[in-house]
Length: 198
Image 1: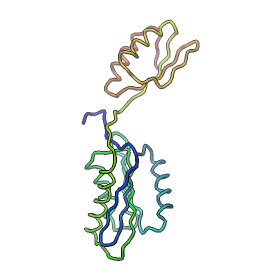
Image 2: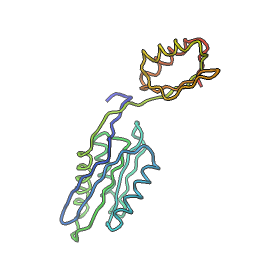
Image 3: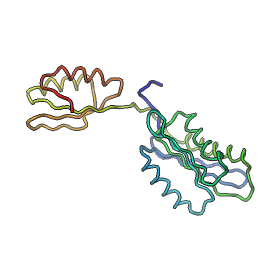
Image 4: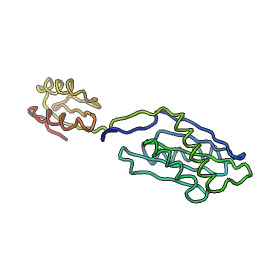
């Protein structure tokens, strides 16, 4: 995988795993921020209020450095860690995996719990559509109207996404492009008269 791409899931997906009458419901969700993670967790804690445990793990950001695993009352390291392990082994990010456990009356033991949480998380991830996204950067700049054609030629040839543009006394534009292509885009824009970056 190149430096400026990462893998995530497109839409929520679910998986179910049962072991000795305990039922594990796993939900994988695409997320971008810790706030989104918290909102989803509140939703699932309310929805499955009668469940014994609502455990989870998440990974955020293309650098995959912002992550957390929570055992929610299960023995330490038996729930959140195996869930996070599945996120890692699939090299995913911007993802939250929640695993809800309904206790079936038979204790699974720590190794049984680890296997169950891992299997449930794997089921949810396997059911998801994984896509590769590019790590993008944005650039905003101002230029005078007569140089519009020069700017548009660069935009047409480099193919960044135009996020916003306004044409007043000074024209203003914000572009988004894959990280690895930004230096070339900036270098070409810098050559245009009157153009200055914000």
